[in-house]
Length: 142
Image (cartoon, rainbow, N blue to C red; front, side):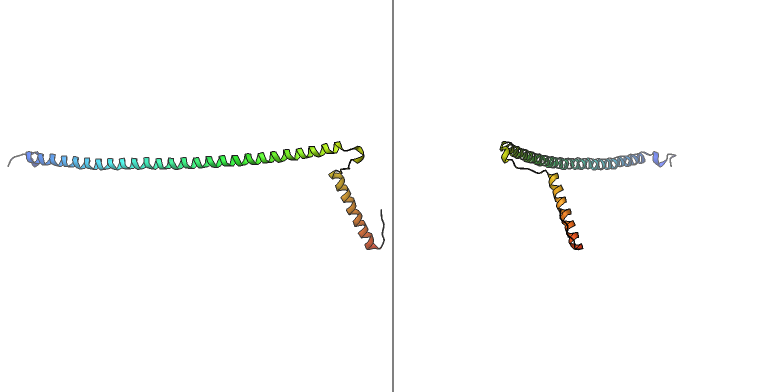
């Protein structure tokens, strides 16, 4: 029996080297599988980013179209109000021109809204006084 250890024999060294090579192949196999998984995950992430970007762009386009439609509607309403105002001003101008053209003897009196309110208030209070007087049995007239 020699004094060499079983690990230092050429057969044992070859076996040890073979195991290391097998470990490297296994490790390389795991590394390749791991790298393949990373690559697949990156591709999935890129695809998801593209899908999200497409959804974002579609929503952005839809919102822009809605905004444009709202602006058009608002401008249409403003235009219609302006047109109505101009029409009222035109009619009022015509009415005033008609009044100016009337002969002084044929002018009609146009009571202001304030005068109309005071007259209505006076008539209402007169009716209330008459009703109260009738309830008391005496009647006074103005």
